[in-house]
Length: 155
Image (cartoon, rainbow, N blue to C red):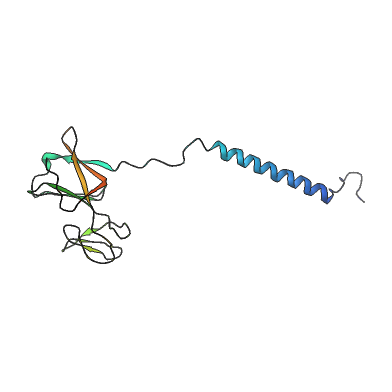
């Protein structure tokens, strides 16, 4: 029997009722907070797949330029200018130069100078990328658009 200063014990039925009300309240508050976040997008925009590689007059025949920031290799020949991705087609590792062409350091895929697979698990050749000229004369590489191997950009 509780004393004069001690509260009466909470009956089990009342405790379960209060617990139900608290659970419902927490669920409603969580739902309202979740709905309040809906108007703001949670996805951040990706960086543009197009970038400027330099002025067109910098690419005279024989020039080879590797853009490590975008993982692209640009080669200027007598036929024109070509851009090739340096991202391995197996699992997306960045290939490095080797004596025979390119080598994937992760899983051993090997590519020749034109990006053709000569060994390893890579399912296809390194992609050649589309090139265009900007209004200011810059060479623009579009990493989102592939071109057939051997297609060169001629200004």
